Amino acid sequence: MKKLLVIIFSIIFSFCGCVVTKKEVETKNCFNSSKCYVKIVLPKFAAQEIEIKALEFEKRKKNVKFIFKRIEDDTNYRFNVLNEILNNNVSAFFVHGEMDAKFFKDLIKPFKNVENLTVKFKETEGFKLAEYFSGVFVNIEKLNSMGVSEKNLSSLEWFLNSCKKAGGRDVVCFGEDISSLVCSLGFKEGIISDEFKEIFKLINKKDQNLNIKLLKEDKLFYIGSSRFLNSEIFGEGERKLKCLPLPVCGNKNILKEEDVFCLNKNITKEEEKNLMEFLNLVKIKSKAKHNLKKSETQNMPLGLKREINFCFKKLKEKNISFDEFKNKVKKQYEKGMGLEF
Image (cartoon, rainbow, N blue to C red; front, top):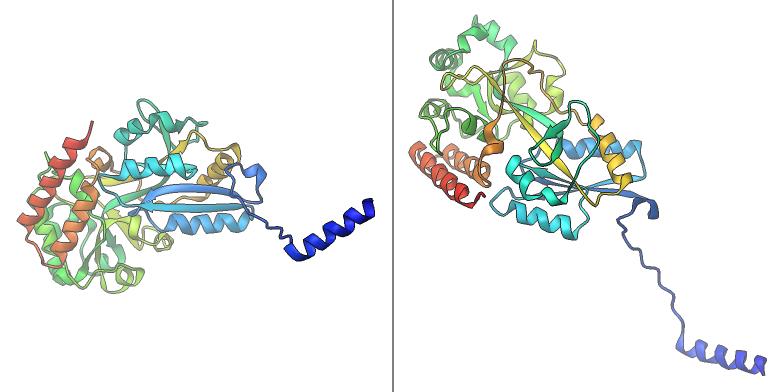
């Protein structure tokens, strides 16, 4: 009887077929998968070098994979990040400052203090994944060869004269992000200081893409953030390239801007361990150490940074005037402040 049943089932399966499928399921728990996925949400303006450092880390630890999600830096940033936290197993996410940290406080996990990297907020804490400096980056060798000292760059008048002596606007290039400088120097109630008009007169439309060649060969000054400079450019030390304060509104400080991230409270121990190891590898810094002032961008309303950079691009292309630039930024500031809580 048993043999007869076996024969019958064999005939049935030969006609119907039996297909076995394998379904690969991505799991949150690193211990249950061959790879540990560390997912990080960051704004679009974050330096690409973070991903480069992640690739270096992955080569050293084959079982770790970093996944980065870039989100538009606008008034919807918090809600887009919230969606990633709740639905896409994010390990860590970028916060603009105290207001962002307050918004996400119930979703943030405390972590053990990391020397020189921990950022304390009133109700929670984060960590610095990177820090950048903004101001006037000067090719010191070229400056000295002109018989000009860096002391001659301490006032707006002297700085403009030095530019003129060196060749005018052709010796100056601008970065893609000047929001730190605008928000931190003479910026009151959304109004940009008119002294920036003199600085922006040096804008040269053809300098849309900044690279090492521009700084090392035919450019004397770069105005902006080290965020958009390849870190290798600092390898030769301050003898070649140095960051100085932008001389507007009586400023005597180099601006320091930090990229601060917080941990998702649902992060696994393995993800957290790899993320903290990654912090030791990521050291995106310039040589600037003195006369530092923290950037005010972390106190600005969401969307303002994006608006400033967008309007600056339009100004650079000569599609708007400086006064139009000021008015657009002020309107975005007022709109953004109305959305804060």
